[in-house]
Length: 265
Image (cartoon, rainbow, N blue to C red):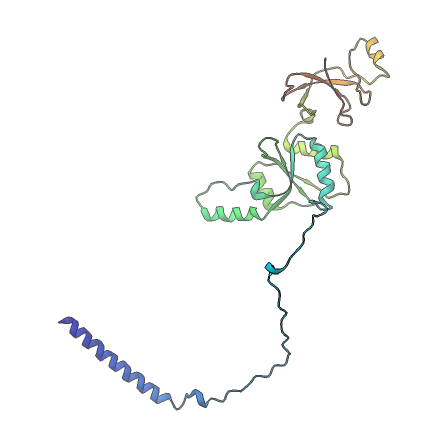
């Protein structure tokens, strides 16, 4: 029974809405008749509209490609060469590496902060990255220029990742660069001297000025070797690691100017 009353009520409400709408339209029909409005038939433009050129779809355009003359620019090439010589094969040198590939944002309860920090480091790039040879783990990053990015400086300090900066120059002193790199790495120069087979430690030996020939050494009672490369006195080193760990070598006393090395028989 209540359903019938509901239908009847809705019908009455609908009728009153219809009547009210009709009265309003009839009241304002004469005042707001769109057909009586005085609208311009056309609009005059002061500037001439030129047709835009039609660009062919990229899919239909055949492009040609060629190799660049170098993957490094004119600023990076000299310093890259100097860095390679300074590292002397002891580390791997990578170029133009995204900061997000070197550093991760640590775990945090604030996921939004982690996302923002991850996005920030993804927009940054290191000019060079020095990596250890086994897992390619970054041990030092290098930036060129007179100033450092504050964000990169901060995150490298937080991650305890050494960051070295070199000014852009026309030429570089390899010995100076090597000293700067190993200082950043926290490696003493005596420990950094190496051969192709191993890293060598200095063994206590008397320092002797280079004589004219080996016979003078023998006559003086000091059994040392002369460098086959430059004839300077050779000193003993002991291999710390690698296949020759524990073995002794002769190495030129003028290293790194001369890299002469001989095995001790």
